[in-house]
Length: 110
Length: 115
Figure 1 (tube, rainbow over the protein chains, first blue to last red):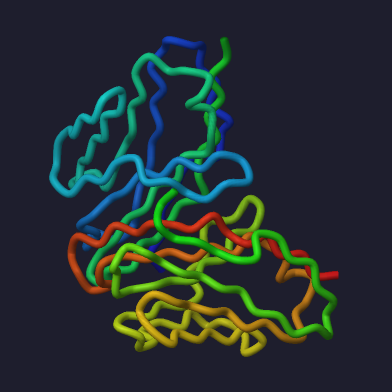
Figure 2 (cartoon, each protein chain N blue to C red):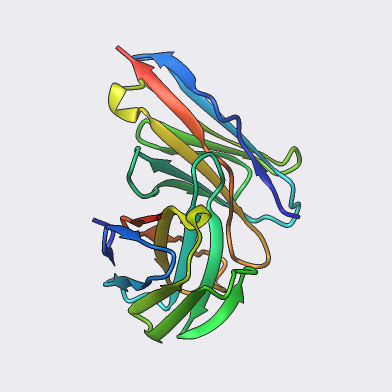
C-alpha cells in the first residue's frame, strides 16, 4: 500500500516567519513529487513539483527532496496570512498516478 | 482558473435520485480523473481515463458510473447514493496519465450532499 504521510497540524507561524511543511512517502519507486495548496472550500492548486534530490526554489517557496530518506518538504519564506491553507503532498511512482497525503493545515497569524 | 470546469458546483440529492456531474477541460490534455475528497481524509482516486479509455477503477462502487465521450469531457453518473457518499468531487486533467512528467490540474469541484 503506497502511503504519503503528513502531519495534519495545524501548523501556526507568525507573519514573516518561515513555514516548514514535511512529508514522507512509503514507495521507494516514487519519482515525482508535488505540493498543492488548497484553500478552504476550494480545489487543490499546484505550487511546486520536484523530481531530483536537493532544493528547488520558486519565489518564496522552496521544495526539498531526499530520496534516500523518502522525505520531501516545502519551505515558505516570509509567510503571509494569505498563505493560510491546507498543503497537500503527493508522490508518484511507476504507476504515474499520484498518491496524496491528508494535508497539513497552515495558519499564518499577523 | 486552471482551465478545468465542473458543473454543478453544489448538488443536493436524495438516495433514490439519479444525477450527473460534468467536467470539461480546455487545456488540450488527454487524461482525466475523478477524485473524492472527504473531510480529514486524503484525496481518493476514483477513475482515470487516458485518451478516452478507462485505465483505472479504484474499486469504486457501481453506484458511481463514469463516462468519457472525448478527451475534453468527463461525466460521473450517480444513482442510489448513500449519505456517506457526501463529499467534494474533484475532476482533474493532465497531459497523459503515463507520462513521467504528469502534472494534474484540478477543477473547482462539486460539493455533493446526499440526504
